Structures are given as structure tokens and as C-alpha cells.
Image (cartoon, rainbow, N blue to C red; front, top):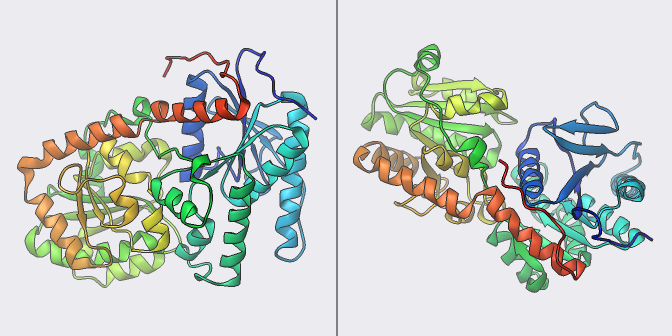
Length: 418
């Protein structure tokens, strides 16, 4: 058994992950931000991924200055047995790594397969486990049209999540909605904290100037641009946004819609746009490299987030509206629980009824027609991100959790480097 020791220069945290950089996803960008912020707080951090990290690469990989270890092997068999074997291989890999690197804390991130592997390994190693929930994966599967609420798969995934939460030494969620749901299930709220989504303002807080040549290349014209940058999932409600465009053009004829990204709904959305009377005003760009995303934000006057109402969207806060506010871009979003945690209607953005193209069009037209308030709303949104959603500041929440689990002050050296 390995016992935690803080006699080294800094406490060591091993993050247990579904996948990581160099894969680009919202999951990996949040992971990167957390690990970088923890390094600035003086902690030593590494990550280890399970079998679902499918990117080719070495057993130990450095990306953006961060070290990630990979789990090797195969987990075959029917559903249930396959996942059980996945958990076993990841737990064994954690234990093998820990005998050399000797972490003080195992910090697992959803899905629950990572949490279960960390709990098994933590018991064998004698070190505490933090489990962090970014979404309930049974609800995410419903949102991605992979299952239905109440199905056997849904119930099994939910039961496993409950088991991991009950056995973890501490639990973190990304928003209050997830925490409240866990407490309603009967879990002890005293061990559940919140680590909200955030923005690294050192990297994402200074918007570039509008690229007129890029705007001309894309045929955006001189009118206001409504944008969406992200994955095209059904729950994002992009069909409602496209349906709103003819109504918006009646009031703002030179408005344009810029859709950057891709995903499972892309083909259906393109067909919907082609059949629309607003087809000339709707521009699909496809996916762009992550380092170019800011160029497209800079083209947009308003970022639109018309998410549909569901358990997933009511409980989970998205990252994209925060990035937009950090860029001093106006935000219009559907009035669902996940957005209400981030956006104050009329102050840091505007909210409109979900699943309602007319309400979306009205909100966008109202915002575009009230330019005298744009700077006030932009400034309020930027301040909100700086005050409530800066990664470095919020990562300090982990320190008290780790300290309580270890029963002694953390030995860490805070860095002021960006």
C-alpha cells in the first residue's frame, strides 16, 4: 500500500480521464485548463486515460507541456462485461503508474467508468479519490439520440453514477444544477462541491480585430452576424435557429448566420437551410482548427445558443457562452437552467423561450436593434467571466478539498506565471 506523503516539493494529483489532448473536444479543453491552473497553484499534475482515448501515440505523451499516460489492452465481450474489463485495465494502469510517480490524490473525471477505476485503484493504493462530474452521461446519451430516458441503458448508467458518487471521498460538479440533482437523489451534500466552467483569460480574453478579408471571403456582407461555434448536436437547437432566420430577416434584412463546426446533425441542418427562404443568409463553414476559432468569434456581433429544453440542458452549464462573453461578444441564449446559471437576462446577455423559433428571432432582432446598449452588455459579460469564471481563481476551490482529504495543509508553491 502506498501512503500519501507531502514531504516532496509539491502535492501530486493524478487525473483519471476518458480522453485527453491531442484530441480536441470540450472535455479535453476543460481538462487542459484545470491542469494548467493547478500547476499555477503549485501542484504537480499528470493525467491517465482509459481505453476510449483512441488517438495513436506513445505510452507517455506530452501535449502543451502536460504529461498524459495511456492505458493499453483490449476489453472485449458483451455490453456490461466489456465495460467491467475496461474499468479493470484502467485501475491496473493507475496502480502501476502510482508505484513510480506516487500521487497524493486520484482525481477522476466523468464518465463513471473513470470514477470506478479510480476508486478501485485508490483502495489498493490507500489514497483518497475525488470524482468530478461534468454531465450525467445517461442524459448526455439521450441528448445525443443514443438512448431514451428510462431505458435499460439509461438506468444502468445512472445506477453506476450513484455508486461512484457514494464511494468517492469527495465529489465536484461543474454547476449547481448537477449538485442539486445529486442531493435530491439522497447523496450527502456536504461532500459535493462545485467547480464551474471557466475561461483562461490569459489565452482567450483579448479578442482579435475583425478580419475584413475573411468576412469578404465568406460572403458575410456588411450587416450584423449571428454566430454559433461548436458541435452540431440535436440538443443545441440549431434547427430552431435556422427556422428563426426568415423571421429575423423580415426585421433585419442584412443579418447573416455563421455556423462553424460539425457533428451528427450537420447534414440535416444543411438540407433545412437549403430549403429555407433565408438560404442566402446562412453560411456553413465546417470545422476549423482550434487556434483559428478566435478569428471567427471576431466576425460575429451576437453568439446564439438556442439549446432545447431537456434534463441535460437544464442541469448542465455549457462553456461556449463564457468564451463568447470573454471575447466581448453579445450572447443570446434559450431560457434553460444551464444558461440561467451563466447569463443574467438583459444584463450580460438575453434569454428567450426554448424550442421557439419566433422567440429566438424576436430576441435577436431586439438585441440587434438596440446598439446603444451593446457596450454596456459586453462590458458586464466580460466582468462576469473575470469575476466568476476565471480558471486560475476557481481552481483554488480544489485546494481546500484536497487538504481536507489529506488532513494537512498542502505543500505547494503558488506560481504567478500565466
